[in-house]
Length: 250
Image (cartoon, rainbow, N blue to C red; front, top):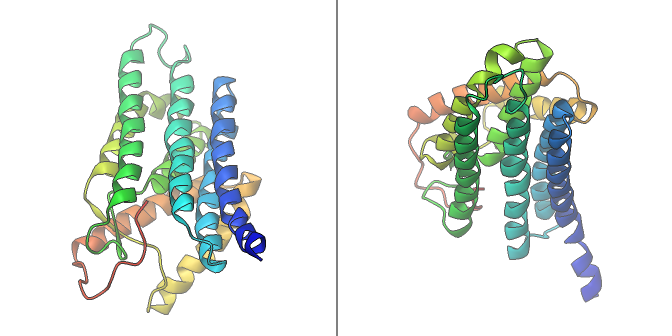
């Protein structure tokens, strides 16, 4: 009986492990010049990151091990993999033929990786008041999704040579946003039926198109829309202290 109960933990932890492996595979793809596939693997990790939490709640299989394991996976897929993607892409001679920008890229990517790990560690040990309603700082998952889908969108529309030279500055802003205290409302059931169904429909679309490497621009616009609308909404809506935090922010 105890063995059967333990088996349920394999489902969410299996999603987490697969996400970590996608992160490692993304690094390998980046190192071999397969940059678009590397970016898609980061987005596949986003899907799995949401599935492991949902599976844990559905199966009542949450555990301290699962929380820590999930953070390690997030560090690989949303910290190391995006850094590898831009390290190998930005070192290509078509962007910096005279070698300029290389040191800046290294410094920026170092800051990005440290910020990712700092955010994950911070919210593993503490949660601020209102953590059940808001993210404090932009989540690593959202940053990873925005960076990967943004790269794919730029490549798809042929603006790679225009945008990528500014990538170190964009990644620095992403790093700062993760460790900041800006508030972003969590995606959860809403009383407004339009908002509720809008979230559900878009979630279904994301899970349908991402595995098949379709419409990265849709994913990118969705990320930007969530950020712009969410940050604006948070400015005019204070934390409801009557609600009790129920889950940690990661």
